[in-house]
Image (cartoon, rainbow, N blue to C red):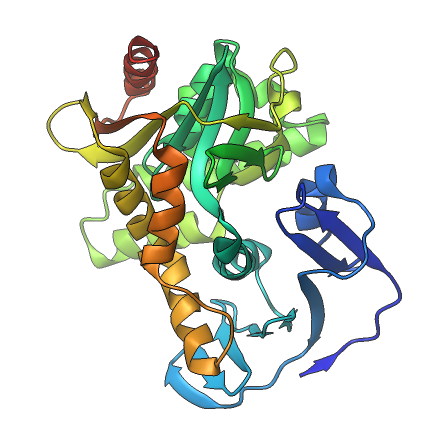
Length: 353
C-alpha cells in the first residue's frame, strides 16, 4: 500500500484508553465527531491514512483478502482498505460511515480488549446518580430511548458507542447523535433544532419526503418494489448533530460507573422487563457485536498473524463491567407508533434503585 503525502496529523486521545492519529486532511466529519478528545501526544496506537490500496494476498471472500502481516476489506462502494497492527490505509471511494462502523471501531477493540476495555455498541445516559447503559443490535431503539430520556432532562453519555472497562467505568466516545427519519416521526419538534439554516432545512425535508414516499409504498409487485428500494436507497435520511444542540438544557457526562444495564431486543407480543444475570447480559451484548463486526476482524487478524482475541475475552471484560450493576433485558413490542418509547422509558425509571 502506498500512502499519499501527509503534511499534518490530528491526534485524538480517548482518556488514555486508545490514541488515534488521522491525516488531518481526511474524514473531516468523522474527526469533528471526535473533536472532544483532540490532543497532541507522542506515539499513537493506530494511524488512519488515505492512500493507494491494491488487492493482494489470499481472497477468502468477495470483500476480504489476507496476507502475512495485514488484511484488506472492500466497502459497498468498491473502496479498499488495508489494516495491520499500526495503520488503517483506505482508498477511494470509501464510505465514511462504513469505515467508522465496520473498520475503525472493531480495530480499536483489537487494541483495547487486552487492556481491559471495550468499545460497546450501546447508548448511555445519566439520571441523577444512575449511569444507564443500553446495549442492542442495530434498529432496536436505543437512540429513541436516549432521546426520550434527554427530553426528560437526563444527561447524555453515548449514542451508539461507549468505552467501558473491567471496573464498570464508562467513558464518552462522541458527543454526536445520529438521527434517522423515524426519530423525527417520534420527536417532530427536533426538526426545528436539526438545521442551522432555512436552506439546510429545505434540503433535508426534500430528502425526507422522497424517503417517506418510498417507505410508504407496499411493494406488492416488481415495479413497486423497485421504486420503493430506489427511493429509500437514493435518499437515505441520516443526520448527525451534537447532543447539546438538540437539547441545550441537557448536560454531557464524560465518565461514570455503570449502575444499570438494560439489554434491548424486539418482541412480537409484549413489552416487558426481565431481570437478568450480569453474565447473561454480557454474553448477549458481546455476541451481538461479535457477529455483526468484531468477529470478522478478529478472524482476519488471526489469519494475518496480527493482534487478536476471542469472544470469551470480550465477555470477560463485560462480565466484570456489569458485575455490580443491576442487569435487565427489555423486550420491546414491535410498533409503528412512537408510544412504545414512553412505555419503555417509564419501565426503565421504575427499575432504577
